[in-house]
Length: 420
Ligand SMILES: [Zn+2]
Picture 1 (tube, protein in one colour):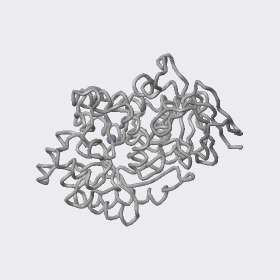
Picture 2: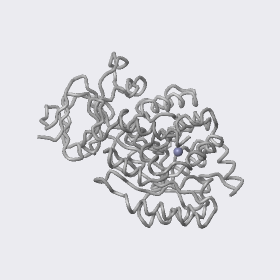
Picture 3: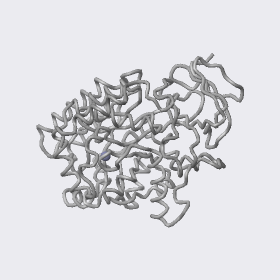
Picture 4: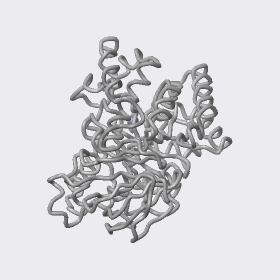
């Protein structure tokens, strides 16, 4: 008897759909079989589609609160607007803003996310209470001020010590220096040193815009990736968001140093930052994951939308219909995202964490030749019926079981006036 059994569903296993039964015990997938399994809780039905749940590899979840405050602006003007409002965000706002982000993520089959922001204790609490998983880091920026550098490092480090491995290991806490244009090379060197000492990882925004590349070149005489490499910052324990403006040699540096890249296509297009060289990164063997970025530049947390967007914009960038295929973006949204952060997950396989989304077929899933194409090119997210994270059912029949969704929406509406 398994704690949860899912029988006769179309399961995405080893890159293709097959009819199978999946048993879950504790936090793991313990059995995959052709025979029906018994479970204390059972889901069954030939219409069900079972996939590994998504991991949103780069976001600022609480930015739901800033959704719609700075529209149709490029990054530098957008940031000015965002930073002005962000100053007003306190602990309460970050908690409820994150909860709203988690509502959206659960509803579209996301089991976990990587978050770089402020008041991270509140983000950690929201993750703990909602039952999802997260890689969390406090967004540090020294801006050339040594006093500030010391304080920022203290906050970042305290957060790691307080929260790493919390809630049955659902939280992984790492370092989050914001970007090379807000952090000095001296500061980044110290961060990397500390990260290595604590045997942890770092997540940073790099080469998001052409402006950033020119700014870093004029300050330090090198492009951002070259600068980071020259101070020994880059290795397999570093995950960079964006990498939109990189040249051939920089791609080679990323490959050689085993750096993972998080591609955020909707945000990059919305802020007119550019389109990353994802096809080439994949061809070179660079691990590319998919992220939504924050809700102020997306404006939603929906990996179905992000997968389709990623695939479409690469097709146009390279003028090739097979530039990035459905299976590529699906891998970016699942196993590549887990492996970027050194975690096991993103596959339906015995011994893997039970992070599973169970979908029903919407009208656009018919005729169902290959559900993968429906998932990447047709789905809206409404198809996700049940979500299991770490072996716990967090959503059943589209109802979130771990917290009161209505209360989150009411709270966020009540905060609106204070924020604006
Ligand atoms: Zn970001």
